[in-house]
Structures are given as structure tokens and as C-alpha cells.
Length: 101
Image 1 (cartoon, rainbow, N blue to C red):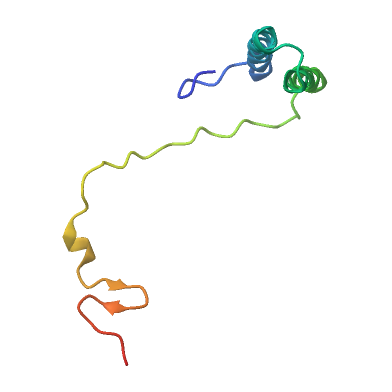
Image 2: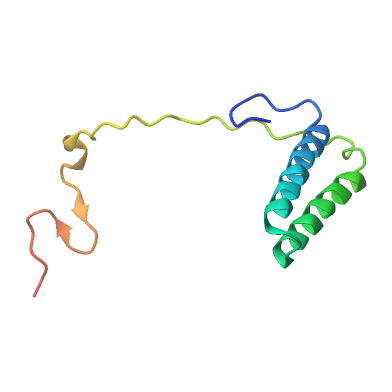
């Protein structure tokens, strides 16, 4: 699944595909680094991911995927200075005021 795209109809199949890509990448790392502790851990992690996918089974009855998150785009322009009229600086009071002595 690509960021920002529609969700895959079968997320487990998509996860298996990504796990296959990850396993291939780990084999390339192993070819470059040899049989090191880090490489053995990576192989073990990939194997554990595949085993977890195998154990998932069908989704729980009545379980629905969460609704996609709607993101609001905030423009990158300066705020209107009038928004800060009569604003107080936390702990110091209003602008131009002195703290009590």
C-alpha cells in the first residue's frame, strides 16, 4: 500500500507481499555484510513477521476497519496580527505591562 492511496482490499496479502520484499532486502544485506549478529536478527524478525501473518486467521466478526483520517491543510502564510490583540503572555500579563514588584 502506498501512502495516501486507497487501502488494499486484502491487507494480509499486502503485508505478505511487503514481507517478501523485506526478506529479499535482508538477503541483499546478508550478501553485503555476511552472517553477522545483526543479519541473523533481521532474518529472525522477517521470519517472525511471516509466522504472525500465518497465525492471523480471519478477522473478528463485526470488526470494521477504521474510517480514513481526514487531514486539514493549514496554509503556510503568516497569521493575521489582529488575532493577537489583547492577548496576554503567559505568566507576564498583557503586552506592555510590567509584572508586580
